Length: 217
Image (cartoon, rainbow, N blue to C red; front, side, top):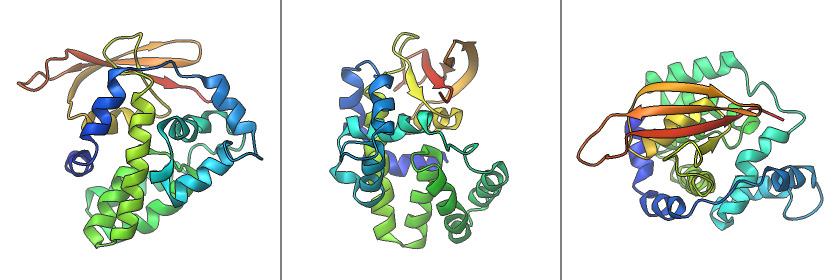
């Protein structure tokens, strides 16, 4: 996954830096309102349609509605089958990209903003020469990363990077070119906070990174 993330990183570096400079509070009340809005062009349903067709035309605040919106979905499946994810991960480890696409696309339809699925599928489209789908999938990642990082840079437990799945912690660390050594978890009422101690290098001076994983509401 690390090599895959580095490929995506090439088009993300500037976007990530800008998003991390001035984090703003995550307004979950507004996101819940958007999820319940099934009529207007700014509601979750309409934005998800645009996300699946032309994500490059959406703004980061709209990406945040798509990414965090699944926390409020009543029909949210457990997200996608555990068996399906295990098979997906096995295919990725085997670098069986053609079969991974077949397995991954139905999973993504159930969980459209999963960074783990998007990263693996983007790599698979690149490896199989599908430039159209590679561009579409990378555009989704280009939208979601600043949408997440605009609400926290992870340098302290008061500026956590807020995610909807533990798997996304690993993806984001890969995209930020960080390696975690140890993880310490603290539970809160609506989430749990993971503090990762980081491997130091000439490039990395930061000692730790903080993630907050929200429970579905």
